[in-house]
Image 1 (cartoon, helix red, strand yellow):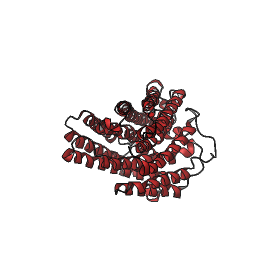
Image 2 (image 1 turned 90 degrees about the horizontal axis):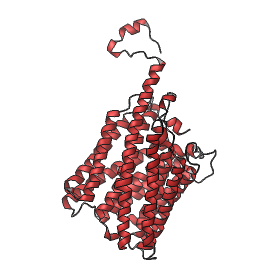
Image 3 (image 1 turned 30 degrees about the horizontal axis):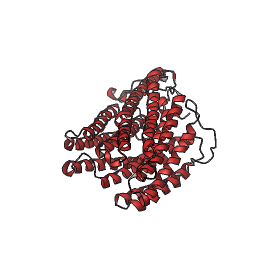
Image 4 (image 1 turned 180 degrees about the vertical axis):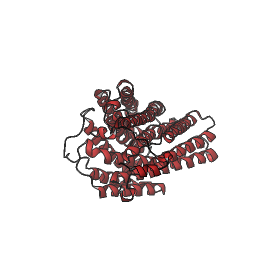
Length: 459
């Protein structure tokens, strides 16, 4: 757009924008893309560290103790909760924040992403999660550190929410959010409520607790809120956004997706109100509605996009949604027949590892290389190995946890440590592949046109 000489004279010098050449504009865009990529790599790298050491390794150690003594009560509940917190918030939470800070400004056409807020959020979030893990494991000054860690995590979420909500699309008055946006909003509310509940729980433990572990009854409700209120809707949101392109699925059924959210939310409300058993069928119903809305198991209308990843990518995505159904059905079974925590534990493991982790390993290796400076995935073979090992380990863990804990088969206790080691190997393969991509694969930002990142990730 051009302006006349008279118009130019009337514009104050401080408000005049410098005229840049196309080459300068492209260079600025590439520099911004490189900055976003470095930010994303920081979030993903810290998430991988939480996943491997405080998360998975501690989980393997806990299971080795349980299997050796053939008793779920033989390991510290504080250690079990430290493992879960590192996985849910340290790993998945860091991934979500990083992808959010990277993608939301780009999707909404922002020219000046909030880099200062994003880096501040990363520092506060990482310190908060690490502090929580250390307080649970070592027990040093836990009455002080637990509330402080929860407050830091809540503050990081507020920074994230304010930063991304400031990026509004042009013509926002006429803007109608796509279906996946409503799912993201639902998941974000679930994350906020989970963090608020976490803060309230740490205050309770600091004032009245005998150890840095949430009481069992409260912990069970909290886990449902975190899993079905936060993690599951986020995976549904990313599936709604990317799976129609990646898997070549038929068009989404938006009304069924919204119905899935409503049914799932009702189940969470009932659980928090103390009616956990009647809520379990609602989680299965919500999962069925979400699968029908996404058309996950229906025939594709076009070939899946597997360029740059292993050809088995669509198979593992569909398998993950199969695990979601298994988790829901095991929850119904646990509400009626569980006598030792084995069926409940199997249900949670099917959800967090079979569904959440398999989806992260599948979709993460599809999009993260493109987001992190237009790189190529380091090894498609390592991608398949990680997914295969994780699936085998999860299958052994879910089945043998029921057999062992319910005292159906004593030999299952010997299989549980094997399942944990296999899962650790799968998770390690994923971490190696992502770190190999970040370190060994060159960035192609300087060779790409102005629009990079999300568009190429879905091509």
